[in-house]
Length: 232
Image (tube, rainbow, N blue to C red; front, side, top):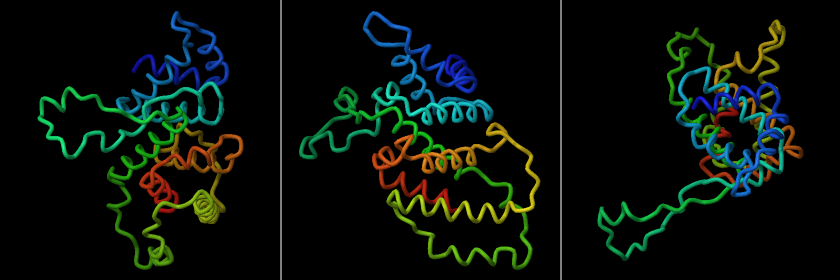
């Protein structure tokens, strides 16, 4: 974890310089430092503890994604567990199952980053929101009726997702009109807001980041989680 936080700090300071440095380190197996570090970094994503550390980790990985560097894109890591690996007609004992290796899909690091971020969004939704304990005024939630038809979005296409993002941005602009700009950086935002802003930026810069291509690699459930968080 300490090593990961060092690389987080370096990436936040200078993403490209950090990637170039890691790529310049070569090992006896012909792999670069980049090929060694990135998979380990992604594997430790869920084990990072501490509010600020989690946010810095997300911001740093987000910067790596925005680089859209082919050297990172070409690094393969483990994705989802491949289902139905065992013949349903074969009786497997508990001891046998422990010895059977689990096989995972091989995916690009960039797809893995999106999957990890969506998983974190899902986790954040399970955390208590202080606003839920505030008694709202009469009529305060009247404008929510217009969203009732969108409660079950399903897994939207890329085009539909971007239209949701545009609609959400219009609402945010209306709410922020007249507010004083404090110039807060990403580190001062909460984790969920950082993730949502990341996905919005990805969609806006889809041609540069190849977000559309990676979006299609997500599961239907992951697409639905992302869409739900964009709008609600």
